[in-house]
Length: 170
Image (cartoon, rainbow, N blue to C red; front, side, top):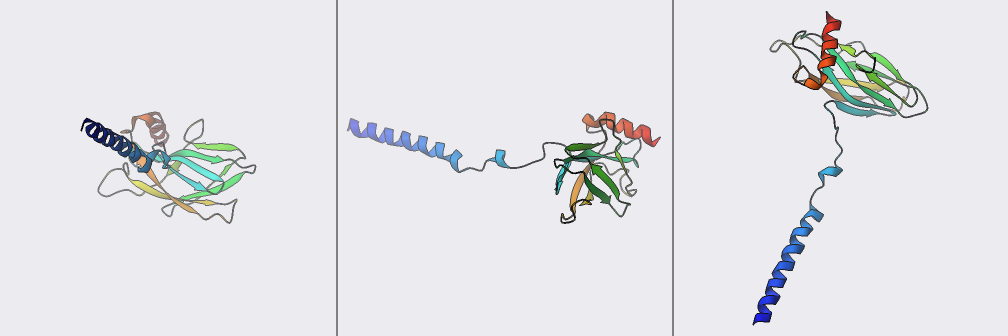
């Protein structure tokens, strides 16, 4: 009788241990999911990788917007690409071989963005703007659309860049 109780207790304990340890074997691993560890958007355009793209504005100058971010070229040839949005004239950029083009920091100016005036709100802050990137160097690479977030001074990490944008618009 005592043997049966000990055997039953051991069986229940081993079932509980095996059952709970197997849960981690079958559950989804979020650490394997790709994501952008930044505030901005990212995209891949053939050999050019767009990273941490965002548009900044200020409540002091609500109709002034600037695109910041990085474009990475890890090939041995200069890559040229075109940035366009909302029926505005396209801008062409070149990234030298094995280089990074930084818009808005490291001594480079941000790309001025002309967004239409909004009727209901003063600013585009908190919205997304769709930009199209097209490769001029790689004709077989299809253009991509990237939804780029618009931030104002409520995101304090970019205050120095927002102040730069405000100073340039005055």
